[in-house]
Image (tube, rainbow, N blue to C red; front, side, top):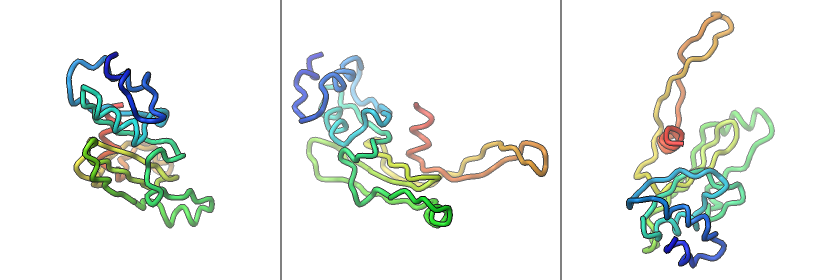
Length: 157
């Protein structure tokens, strides 16, 4: 675990970065759940000898996620419907030790925050799923939109 011993980012657990030591090649893209994903861990993973790129859902507490992007959860149904589908995003540039980080927040039933080092675009993709139609008493096709970065993350997890 050579590179994990050299993890010099404050509050970045060297055991977590040490997980990356098992990778045999450079340039992997790794999806993280909210237990691990943070801007700091992203930077540590890219500076690991395997140059790992991360994407995933960060904890609600932020951990490097810009406060300007975070959407507050609404409690009233009318407020929830008014903000549903709202997208806030940014590109964090300028760190020579880390590729661009893309934080985004989309309001679905509640706000969902996402942080990616693995994308060069954010766009809506149309998805289709079978759902039960009570009045027709059968399964019918239902179309909905999802962000491409969330869709790619969900496919790989």
